[in-house]
Length: 420
Image (tube, rainbow, N blue to C red; front, top):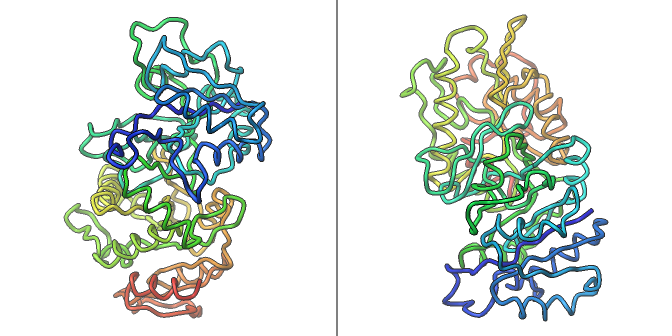
């Protein structure tokens, strides 16, 4: 397995503090980040690492020479092309048929091997690691379908609304997507390589991947390391699941007008609190109004998009979504919306799907809901449950008791943080 690390970032936004230091050499726990990435790659079984440099090439070379894996590393400074895409094109003769690309200004705890082998087995031309983040507006993001195939790219600083599926900076690529000639010398990995490829796929993760292009982000990573809050990708993660109506937004019954969807301020604070503690959080909601034709998909999608947009504006995010629109024998699905599920609560299927996808520890996780079926779904999945105050409690019929009570989702999250 081969990995390519791009080390050419100038670090324009960090010049005041790191004027003569390439971003890849910024230290965490007193170790240059480039060495952290290299060490993890070889630990996971990669046999080849290719470093593509530009800014301060000699300084990077001198640093990597001290790495115990130095003899297995090839370092190239190519001047024929520029930019993230240009570096890859310039190194074409040194690339294997399939290879990983990793941006050198990422702090990473991630299963590279699993990602590479899964992408290779599926014969993907490209597979893009994505995740939600607190700054999607200055990130390239994507929308994708139920087969994890990219539908659209939303470029940084160009879209008023964009789904918060940010391109994280780790890619699986097949050498075949690189053309023999390009009309320009400066090439971007997204604009000039991936956008031209018609068969892009995505790999969504909740692992710890943080770009540190600003001082605030560097300080955040160092704080997480100091407080031991960087999730180890090998360990099962504690998560928090939210019902939607009555928990994240105001309960009004069936929402058949967009202006009826009112997001609760305490829920935004709750989600931000989980984000800041690196605790994955998910939305798990029945939405039978779709199959019962009480609302149409256009309105449903606007509601979902409004939630995502409002969270993004407030620098918060849910890690993933699951909606079950089925009701009895009535089924509903769409290939262009990846968040639909066939497991209607109280069936725990939506939670168990996330468990498998993201390596979650359901026994140590929590479900926050406002109905009896939420409590039963949580119990059936093995989670601990919080029942929040809601008008729906007058319809509480199932003989299932919550583990805990809370005034609202923020109260629940504050109590959760004291328990873990």
